[in-house]
Length: 138
Image (cartoon, rainbow, N blue to C red):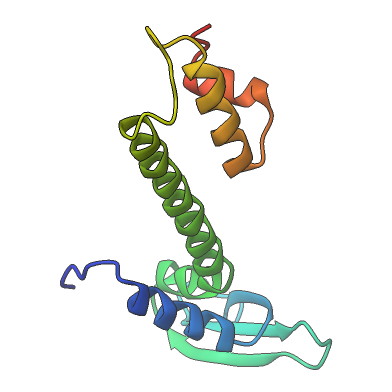
């Protein structure tokens, strides 16, 4: 697999595939009782209709588990990536504001409080989490 840069278009393509996949509970199971038999991916739609076999004859349980979990894992990872991208953008804005003289820290008083407040707003967390993960610089 070649490494491709993360571009907005690439992320949009991944998001479109995730959005197009049937919403519901995806699981993998062996065909029968013998763990040596092939696996299948079964999906139970969110609308309550009957289950669907999504993939048949998958010989590696790890592959079947990967496919079955992708329905939840991909949207989760896309949301996390968006959160981190927002944090980076906020940090860049902050640095730009400091460079433009929009924040007067003197020998940096109050910077920790300002940074914590910005990060708390971004991650929707409280000051305790921020102090625990970023340290308390007061």
